[in-house]
Image 1 (tube, helix red, strand yellow):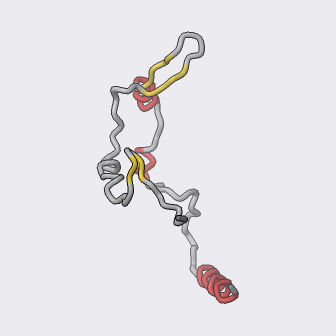
Image 2: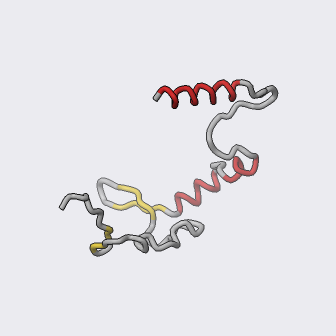
Length: 101
């Protein structure tokens, strides 16, 4: 544990030696470029598009949900076979052995 602490303190000392003059402080861990800011900007157009994808259900206690016929573009993130590498399956679920027999 002392060896780990010593290496961490050494790392902090080395980081403190770096000259950061003129470097703007990091506000968050995300892309803060002008293009990213433009993509993430919420305006009346994006709100209108979001509201058009919703519907209200219920007569007295209305609740809002996304319309079913609309699909969300995941840009290929969900095009892979999630269950492809599961060793054991039970229907649409994968099974994890606890190791106890």
